[in-house]
Length: 515
Image 1 (tube, one colour):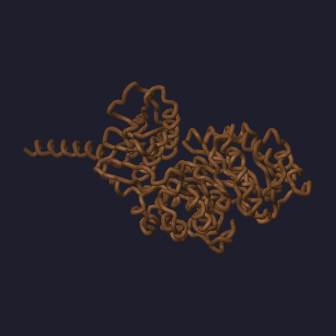
Image 2 (image 1 turned 90 degrees about the vertical axis):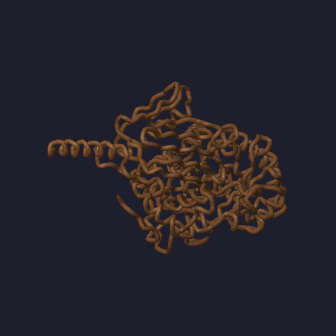
Image 3 (image 1 turned 120 degrees about the vertical axis):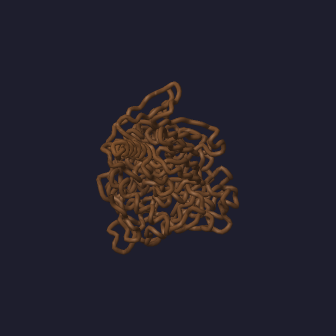
């Protein structure tokens, strides 16, 4: 009798051991996702990732092949397991399966569904972009738990149905004040993808430097690209730029090139004297002052210049937008400014692109195809909306990433505000400017101006973690946005940030939790 009881007891332990291995207690609802998903249902079990787990995609899908490779790299980074990617004719019942299913959300192509059970993970997107964003959510779930068994990581089970609130969720990198190499831009793109951002706006020209090759005006780079504020200058050849565009497109990031005109043009004027009203080339400039330069708006060669620049950029830009700047043209008479923007708008449309410009362009006769990029004056944004234009929101007092965190920050400026983590998160797009409603807003963009910034580590320090909060504002439903909850979830992003080598600002406002 005692022996029988002993056998039963041992068998019971064995069953419990097997059961625990396949059902380690885990709660998907307690994972600190950023951005917060729209819908989440936890089911109380778990999926195990081991060295034998496979990533499965259907044969012949190049987008999914790249996404699978990105997931493979992420899993290896965080777990050490080097998973196999299989191209299959149909999905089985095991492994991590990636697929496109347009019926998930026919209105939002960035939507995805993530289903995790004990045997399988299924990540389905309404498009390739949706699959990629679902992968990023899954990677965050991986970080929530780790089993005690060697090389086995667990992921809490459940289902997430998710999609963004705004279709435009971006960042801007100023490569004109100080130049950043192609690899730096690629690194920045990767960091944006992790938090489901989908636009990178490159500020390519300013008083201090011209950073994009224009073959019909070669001195723009040989002269205008030779200086920067804190370095020796530099520029992108058109092949460099196309490489950036391709890299971004593969990660469902749209590149928006900006040529800042008619002001912020000293580098162009120093390269070609004929663009200046007095016909003289000014000295190259490495200072911080703004608003002192302008193209000569009543010379026809100016518009030939604009036409050539827009034409060459349009030919190598995959996305629909060309940003023409238009800000701080303090020495351009208003009538001349309006005339210039009107003609530039026609040039941009001639090359089948949508004109974007900083909010000052609303003074011109912009049409409903134009996009006003709000940064300083709400009345300008409202004026643009009255003319039928849409608006991108980049309020300088909330999302400018070059603004110092506080008076002790060693980088950046504070002319707009000191922007700590709480104030960068605690604002609502629909309460920003009176009269601008949801239907008027294209989305949100977080600009980083680089007058004081010249290295990738400095970029990361000023961008992170503030842009993570901006990503959530652009993605998650407004009812999900809560500072007290967000700062706790942000604090749990440490393993993700540190594994990726991000040099983030460890604000005292955030309860950082290190593993």
